[in-house]
Image (cartoon, rainbow, N blue to C red; front, side, top):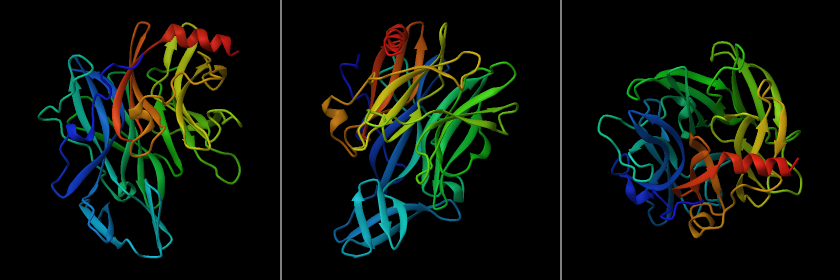
Length: 346
């Protein structure tokens, strides 16, 4: 069930990181509990104010300062067919640069920024186009952040950790390009840690969900494909994991996103084996959520529901999601209902 007062956050609710920038979008927060509150780690996408006759977009320079590249809008070498990407002289850039912003709530729907908890920005050349879509997993008393690092070299997975949200340990790139949609399981299975991730193979293969394992959270191996896209269905073009799968009596319940050839993004579910999560026991034939509300159909990039964060209390899942690549929303789902529908799809 969608929260009646969605969206809960819009670009107007936050201030830009600096005066020269404008917030275009709020997207896909990581979600966690800390200090007795619900917290969101929101992806904030910014760009410079646009001037007539030119297209401008931000980049990080070698000193990690935001710089602005300006291109005449009349240039024949400029391709603006995708609102998310600028192609210029054979190179691709992002129309916006994203960083991560912390916001907290005592009731799960009204969020504010708290003093002392600063934003998380890109830190080097591997994040020069920004950082995106962070998943947060509490594992053995430490919060692990797995997120997409974007640069001219490609899209990769980076990891940081923290215990207080003020000091962070940076693990660097844990998966090289092209990879994203990475989330950690929130407990070991046997003596191994597990992660889900999404490498892309455009010539042979596709955008599939994979799994990897580790003994130390730093070195990952035994990569296996868990699930593929399905031709002619709602998840025919690409799929990717949400946040940490939910342990249930029947296995690991994973909420994931899928998109079709028209870039319509919906949410579905998979049930993974409790002892060997590389095995899929059941999978949604139909979405568990699909874009239907006005704020999900129209925005920066419409017809999109995308999640990488939720909290679980018994049977209830408090799901936080990005809608139309513009605003943040909430919905409440039932673990039992999702499992029951998965049984019907077997």
